[in-house]
Length: 114
Image: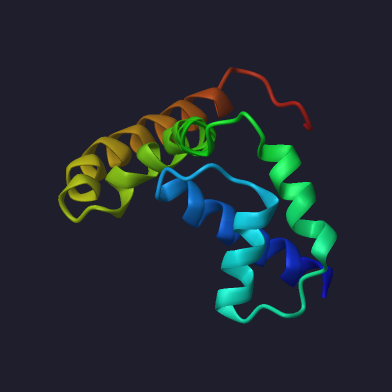
């Protein structure tokens, strides 16, 4: 039940931040009451309001999204249709070079096991 309460308070805080309204315990409680979230303990909204007091939630989300955007951006070309087709010949050439180098390494003039 605790995680549902945290989630409800988080959503309430995000709604307030999206509307550029200061996040306070009373406003979180009002949103939760309007949404019919009767399972949230009264102290939870106070904890969230205290934790977010003086912080810009939009900036927090923006900084978190820029950090995680780098791996997602790197994976984006692989998800596209044309990018893998363009990379396929280069990968095949690399595999051929690896195979050739492995074959040449095996014939060095001596036999380790013989």
